[in-house]
Image (cartoon, rainbow, N blue to C red; front, side):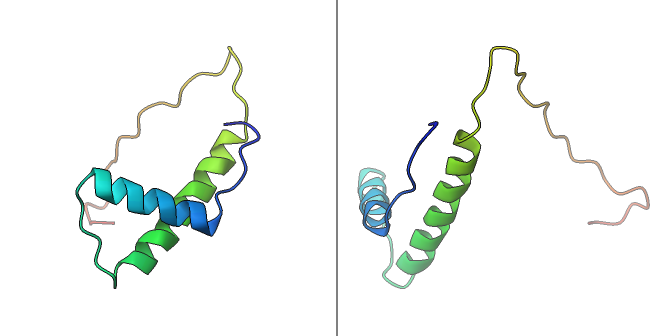
Length: 75
């Protein structure tokens, strides 16, 4: 993914439409703008992560295990 260019709005629309069709996932017209915005956000985050090359000495992150707050209340 290194050097990956950001997706254009047209590419995002095409991807979302194709993915919804393959998954047979109906996408209501009123939901489409939000889905496109979220996908654009997710794609930009993926580009940031992909921009950092890994080396053979890099280790994967540990597992995140949520822990209840010390006072027992919900966060």
